[in-house]
Length: 288
Image 1: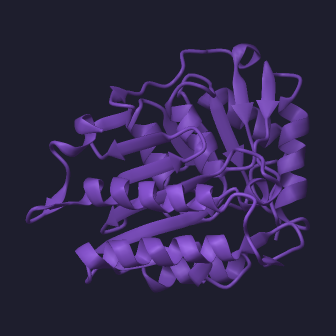
Image 2: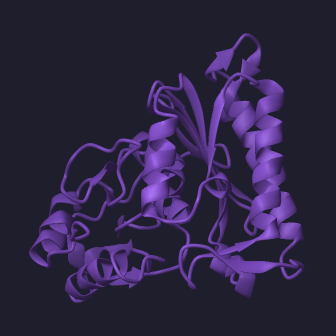
């Protein structure tokens, strides 16, 4: 990963990006070693929102590694937050004044992990005064480490990533998710899925928002949207997409911030088309 580390953001001699890469790699390797070997399986917000001791162990490992290097930085991790959308919003608000904030999803795709489906990731981002400056998504199964630094590009295996070039929906492969919030977010997302299915080449629902976003950055997907996500699902992926030349907004078209929960990401060329279709299907926000 020599391309990523040479000019990294740093405090003194400690590179933010190097710490993020090292931490994601170690956590991902440990998660992979536990595939098929976890002991506890519990539900959180709903019967579809799973957590294992591996999620919690990976987050503890990540916290310890980050705090070893940056003891004064704040950390927002999924497993340290109570389940449910309201708690997620409040948790982010509680750390909104932090100068340096690490945003961590120790295992994005827990359901896949539980079933042995090989599509899950570790997502680590660092925000400085509310803006993401480092983003790392690691897929341990394929040993793929997606890395971005603000203003310095996004890389995979030492090569700079670039979003895809499709300019029409019918030529585009896009992705979405099936939210754990079965009462609020899921019906909205299904409306979007139903509307877009005949308009695009195909749709993938693979179960890790962070990896879906990394795939947009790498040009493997033309776009991605999902309703009701959390900051830790998206923060790293958002920077990957920006630094690969793509577009990322909320589903209403407003600029991405850490507060976004309904996300729309694309290669930029199909962004307006995706948003138009979602808006037409009343699939851009959760009804209150």
